[in-house]
Structures are given as C-alpha cells and as structure tokens.
Image (cartoon, rainbow, N blue to C red; front, side, top):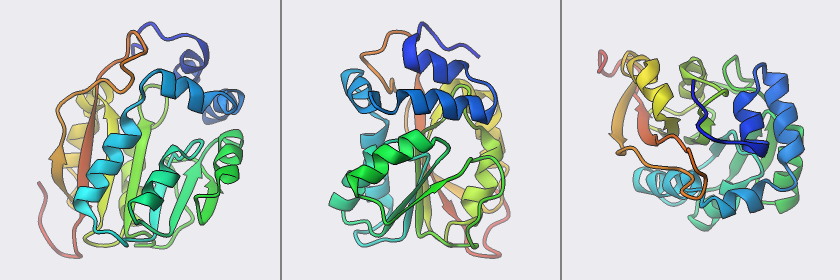
Length: 215
C-alpha cells in the first residue's frame, strides 16, 4: 500500500509492521506530534467531532476515543458537551501526553483489532480518527468496536481511501449489526503534507438487537 512521499515520523509509523513497531514509532513521535500535525493542517479530528455532534446529542456519554494518541480530541469533545470521555491507544508515549492534558476520565493502553476488555454496550458512542489507515488497523477492528457501542449509538470513523476501497467498505456493509448513516466525499486529511492519500469519514450506528437484516 502506497504511503506517498511521507518521511520522518509519519513515514516511520506508516512503514511500521507489527503492533509493537507501530507503538515504538509513535512513542518516538509523541513529544512533537501535536506541533507537526498542526503544521500539516490535520483535519481528521475536526471532521470527526463535527460528525459526532451531528449524530449524538450534547451530554452523550461515555464516549470512547479509540486510538486517541496525544488526546487531540479530548478537549474538543468536552467543549462539545460529551462526557465522560475515555481514550485508548497502543502507544504508552502518546498516552502520557494525553494524560498530562487532563481531558479524559480514563485512558487504556490497548491495541485495536483483537478483543477489548469492555462490556457489551459499554459506550454510548465511539469515535476513531486517523486509525484506519496505512500500516495500522483495518476492518478486523470493527466487530469489537460495534460490540462495545450501545444499541442505537453512533460510531464515527475516518478511513484511508486505499483501505476503504480495498475491502473496508465491503466488510462494513456486510455487517448486519450496523447501518451506515453517512459517508463523506474523499478529502485530504493533511493539506500541508505532500503525497497525502485521501480519506473518507463514515458514521455507522449499532442496530437494536434483532433490527434489520443487513444493508
């Protein structure tokens, strides 16, 4: 899968293979991540917050920020009235930065793509930005994220278009437990970073038990 012309920290995380390599690459990036992403004009967090606000009322909680990184979303979700907000991330270094900001009720060092230690329907909504991308996780993470979302609750995801077109959309639309509420047109998540591959954002909703027979 192409990573465009990316170098530096971004190239390192896109080029990492095993989860421990991805975590190590993000650990090394944690200290400068916020400044570098701001310089790149990073748009996933703002688009994700806007979509969550459209599909979940103020006061919705708990909300899970899945792949929270340094906590770019935490402050914004609080401003929008979502509470409590919990975060999970693979990288201990990124979580340390997020923890220092003080915007999360709880933080969990966990990897997406396997079983998660949360009860069914533990969260009223889930948001995951910048996670379903090159060298990270794919559609295999969807069933667990859906499982831990309450019936009727929205999940807001950003998905790299190469991943979306490479089987993610098909996997999503094959899941009888969810319905697709909206998808955005393709957009560039980092206008200031040459070679950025377009992404989409998608909002899905976990169906009530027994509702619907697929999409």
